[in-house]
Image (cartoon, rainbow, N blue to C red; front, side, top):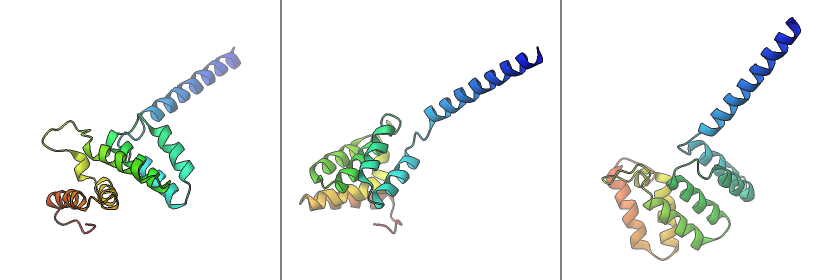
Length: 145
């Protein structure tokens, strides 16, 4: 009987470990920080297809503004400026915090800088500078801008 008990305990332990691994995988990085970092590394390495696959796998688990940003930077890497422009405009407009007084997308340098670049490249310089100026009003000491 001790061998049977050990086997049952082992099976229960394996099932619990699998459930725990699944639960942790489901929760994951809901802010999108880790996904962004990983995809940005892939793009820097020239792995655009891998970046697109990883972004598609993360869809639904990350905020809309992050998904839009990732769509935009991947589209830029693919040379699809119109797609990138629409995606980053959507990211900038997304209000994931549901706070009417403050849209957190306007605080995200990655989104603002990508928006600026797509607007300037699309010959909408004034709109690009407007977004950058709004960011600087919120973050006057940011050296990146």
